Image (cartoon, rainbow, N blue to C red):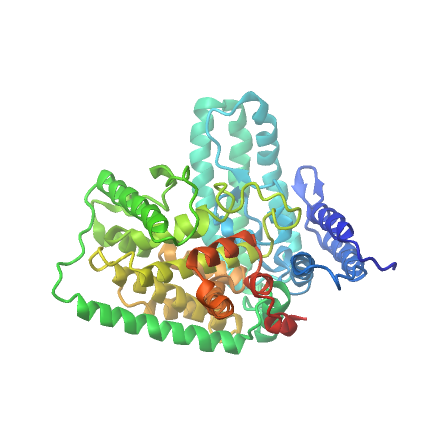
Length: 528
């Protein structure tokens, strides 16, 4: 194959590669049959050969970074076919609703497909009815294909899928009620779709015991995933050491903070939706004011907090009559919303294309698009987790009594589930053991074993290896990068410059951001 050193060839290959990833659709159903997936894998090898024929030697570091981003995404597809194989292993892969556990859709065959249903706003515009009907009609065929495809099924992943199917059933039952009022001609198609979901749920119940594959991918595969897809220069064992240390630190800091606050009044739970939203609005406004006044990052003058309906959730509103029924998120956010406001607004809303602060308007052909295989989330979740403690250390919580306690409780939650992630994927913990260990490591009984907050994270980590681990490891990588940049710039270092440069790199693995910002190649050399 002819060698090339032209950056334009990399861009063209990347754009062609992204088109190749879109699944073939047959009669309205994405084709995940074994023959189709085998053909995709053969084609992938050709793309990888073409990438290897492009020599980035001598390119500026920024362009070499782009090359490594493309390489990592191709490695992700390779891993999907060799190890994860969700179309054959994971019954939850056949998820019909867009927005139902959306972060779990990390596999390329779903990430770039417009297949899943979106919760519609009824009545539908006339022009949208044909496509919506087509998707409803395709659902029975999708599940018939799934029964044939799931030849390597994991019983634990089937257990998770059954729980998700319950939510899909509730969704479709509500949809049928709405269609009966607004679009009665679609009711029959929706009813048949509902019957197909129920049938697949029963099929999973009957066949789960025959699905013998482990849900965990094993340490060796986990290490390959870290190094070659996520571009994280640590092993499973090193991650375990880092995360255990972070867990110990979080528990200790919580106890110290509780001791310091032992004479303060207890937390006050909100008593109405109005009070809940008022607290969140005030926290968001304080966050923006702090970022500007303390010169944490360059904040455009026109940028404002999003309106209340964009807040993380109206935490606790559905449970006001009985606060004892609050789940973990409600327990934390109703006591003190600032930690999650910081996590969500700073870490997510402004790093995932929701405003023009960091990503909208990024026209770079490779960096300006969403990353696949959790690379996007790995970077944004690491940032979100990091800014929680960074702003605590800067003093943003000093005038909010007991707020630091909630930040430390969140730290415990996130490090505990990361430890469970590692142990489930090394197959030291079963699904049920992982759930039990997770709950036991929390400082207060705010998350029951059957709660959504626990199941959400357990499902997420089993289906997307490392997702919750990346919060903690990525956070530590940002601390390392800040230290490196401070030593390089010495008296010229400023936090705002650091944050602006970090954000300006785009949504890429943190190891690549470090390479680009510092020129240091030690981590990069570990990865090739």
